[in-house]
Length: 113
Image 1 (cartoon, helix red, strand yellow):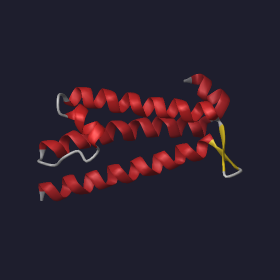
Image 2 (image 1 turned 90 degrees about the horizontal axis):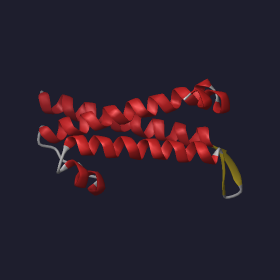
Image 3 (image 1 turned 120 degrees about the vertical axis):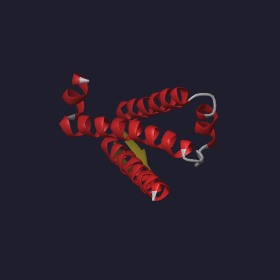
């Protein structure tokens, strides 16, 4: 973890930690919503959720960590000739996960009213 701050900086390290925290929150809230009668809409993750919530959590966590490592390994990427830094991808995933967690909190709040 220390090498992340050395190569990418403290903001990137903070973004990685926040993405992991949001991943854990997303997993927890998904399991909670399913226990309240909801369903996992992602068929791949639903496949892992059916046998065991623990298996679901482990697979989701490992997939998130793998994606983070892949993003950090490319450092710079070119799309349509425009250079995009890895940090841009991390911000995108952070925002996407934050919106998912916010939606899940809304669903849980709505179900308990």
